[in-house]
View 1 (cartoon, one colour):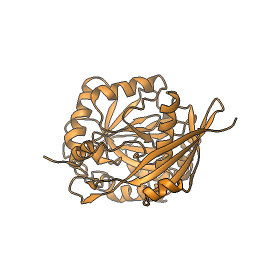
View 2: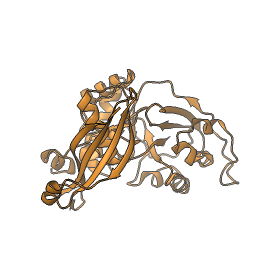
View 3: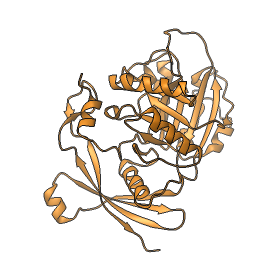
View 4: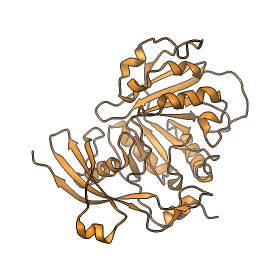
Length: 330
């Protein structure tokens, strides 16, 4: 059976620069089945899900549903829902967790402040929004557990996520890893895909062995670049630049690098003539030790059409080629 993930592997499609973009993640536990657009197609009140997505739009916050691996009975029993908020900028990353009895309570959150990384906004008690919301506001606590592996398993969105993601999540859970299933995080064709918190790096074509290495590194504040798609805090050219510099200088420390600038730049004339569809980027990457680099990238359409999702028409998703990594004067 041909799938989008099979075709992507056959084409050796690069992973760097393909992660979903979000500075802050709002993850809501929701058991039961998920639809293709799960935030508004699950046992979560669709009106609440729609309002949460609207509140998050443009703030740098991404809303997703999570659940523990295993069977997901189609029931509507009342339950307390775990909620996790994670901010992923280097040097400022944090995680907080709470339980809610009604997800509508989350509409009182200051999404702009969360997107900016203001953890103190969770300690405030604003008036619920809308005014008639009766749900009690959650009590937030620092997350003190193991690094989280969030494996995309939403088969209603793409069958590869179910066929490849669910067995991976089950195997990780059986090994004792702190793993959740998660709704859409993009890149179905790279299944199994996952997001690792607290640092916000996404990975593709994962195996249980590779994820265990990633989680072991995260416990020590280290980043494994093999299989990495990028840090969700950065736009996609920045994700590719961050990973390129990490590999260039063999930097593993999670908070060592920050993408401080990103801009379009004309490509060298010879390259542009050979690749007229390419777009040029420069990214400035700074190290905590004072070093810096200018990374020159070319954004190119995929050379051979391929389905970006099972059942979708073949497309030409963007890839990022690193043309140069130049040290900046210190």
